[in-house]
Image (cartoon, rainbow, N blue to C red; front, side):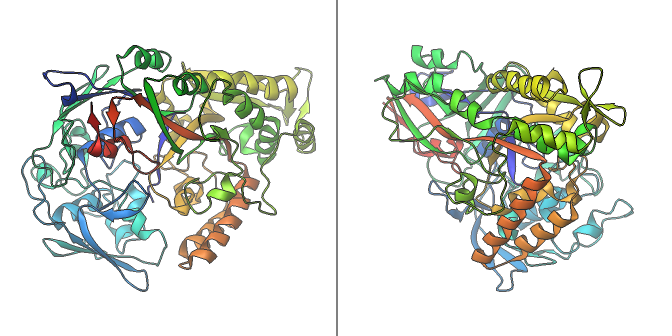
Length: 565
């Protein structure tokens, strides 16, 4: 299933409620974020920041409310079969896209056929993997479009999906994608030709509360209210602007009044001063995500599990969290911990949350607490010995660790010196750092041709559901290929079996236990290091009222209730 948005560190954004072509101050919200790529399609975007645009413009079949409960959206009612093998969506009537075309079941069918199309190059192809007939539909050898029996349009406002097997994440998978207008591509799209959708990513047309007016690389995007919007709310904010901002100066912009809100903050140097500023208010919530290191298991020294385990033991994550998240100036946080070291990689807001944050101890789950001597012994036992060059070597191969890094990134500026000391000075690896921009990093970790260029990279997650199964595509062997979520290219048939058993278990208690077994194996494989989990802080001017945000209810939804004094 499509599980998450990949972002670097904090999804830091700033909102400025200032006039922009309007005489009313509350008419415009200016959102400062890191770079937009222009990939504004719900079936193609990868960045959390592009995801903001998608959230403003599109709707899903179901969406989370502030409390994390699934609520009807484009689907007014949902029927899940007792055997779990089919789901019927009864769609909302009277909904229109921003181009005034009607929303019907044909648009839902179109969206899911696109991600199954043989020519589709995005990351959401796994969404329909278990829908009946998807394998045949996505077969590149087809000369013409085949039948797709797993997607049945009953009438204009009813659509049924049938699955090859009962899986406890089938519903969450289907409601993970915003619905595209089939009318937008009626003259251009044809089976095995998704190029028209790729070309149109900068001109999105959806059923959401806002319409994209203009986008330019480097200057950002502007939005106006969708006059056809079917939902309630968004009455106080008519226009939105998303523009690039620098993380290092955003708090000063907030303090000076040029910016009215900062979202998803994790840095104590901002949280501390804000907590004592009478002109600012804060709300906070557990982040549905974590920062992590992903190893390349398909190439170079990190293809050796002993190397991955040794590097993980040698990295003192607790020291990083204690240092980075120390907040001597923080006041009135009600005992909230800003950061913690996760025990394993999964969704902290799922029912595995207590295992992930260490509240619930699990026998046999190695969380790789810092142990430099154990790291050295692992390398020695695996044949990685210090040679005449001063670096460890094995079979003529130097222990070279190539780090793919993002430039001008606060967390990485703290992590990289730690890695150079632990892995270079202590373990005697040849540590090399290549600095690229965020989009280049994404393109390299997606592409098989770039596997020789990196051994590890740092990234952070933002989960879009409370599913325990979000790790499935991250580690399953079937996704260890280009343009899929298994960046590490890990192939472990034992883990595949454990995850299959967990995801097919319909009893929730039994499923949780099976996922714990899978987590043990994930930690053994050491394809990923969960570096930190944290609390998100939304910091804003006290004149902003009623902003509600949570891990599954982002600012794009919270704008619905915002008023400005």
